[in-house]
Image (cartoon, rainbow, N blue to C red; front, side, top):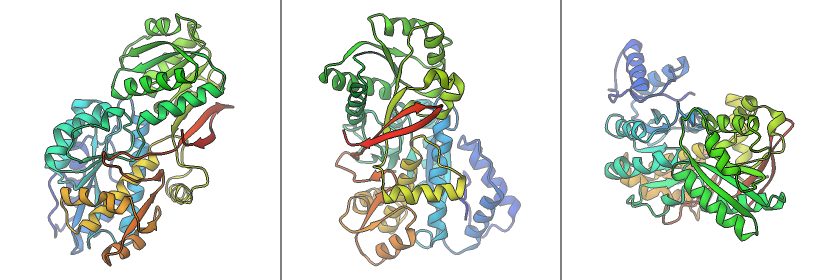
Length: 432
């Protein structure tokens, strides 16, 4: 069963014709900024949901389908859709079906807040998976979802600023803070015997927070960060920033950014002879950079990213389901964390018993933190049966434990990855 996409005006049960349904569905996609067209199977799902007596519940997906993080947004949407398809194929929620309303953040704060506003005021979403960039998630939480009483679960926003954000407990995330990733990166760089690093970071909350955390952790281990240089996205050239980053004898460049601008920086770093050795974080873990820059220049590069512990049964169940539906799971982050955000929001909706954002928020920790019967990815029928019987459940996520603390944060493990023979390989997964 495929994911159905809701119209910008809530659909009325009993609409008779496929033409009207298709027109409403198409309007929703473009009103919310999505570039995706509904598939014929999506239309069939919409028809089935409308024809049934059950209600359709809208889950928001606020993701970058364009812009700097497009490569991650489109992949993460598949994670959301996989969760929703599994849920709808195993009984749905509260006697009805889940639908996905999509908003394109364009990786820009203003576009993100506008798309979020449509999701809560037009599509009446009970919860939202998103956004990805911390620089988008923070203003969305403060200006939209907090005041609308709609829970927002980010699968990718890692800025430490989010931990203490005043959001009335409506902002959660399924990815750990960069306060932890900075420590993990410091450990990996040290064990590779790199002693002097120049850092370039994208000038937003994500880049600044992770750059600071890495510097503190690396220098605590005896390393030197000889320069930290912020860069603005969208520039035609970054040679000036590269000159500053390499000026004090740095032998490696730690690039904390996104593929769109990161590719330009890497090409200029190589062409200008500024750096030959590169260090990356989660925002640059994409096969796209290898194909764009060239494996011969990037082989040997290292990095870190949030990643489930090796051998995790939950991670295997998720991977097998993803491979079956979409083909091989790509070696990039956030697909599993987006899946977890969708699945846990649906569990909280089922436990809340009503389509109300505050009620859903109040059940998130109950279904995610335990104690209770373990629920793994894809086990919706089991979860629904237990929840409806008043039993306690504990969701074990595809990305690892999804235990929300008082700030809505999760702890987690990190993957040490490298580029070898033109491919991204995980060296080990560890807790810093």
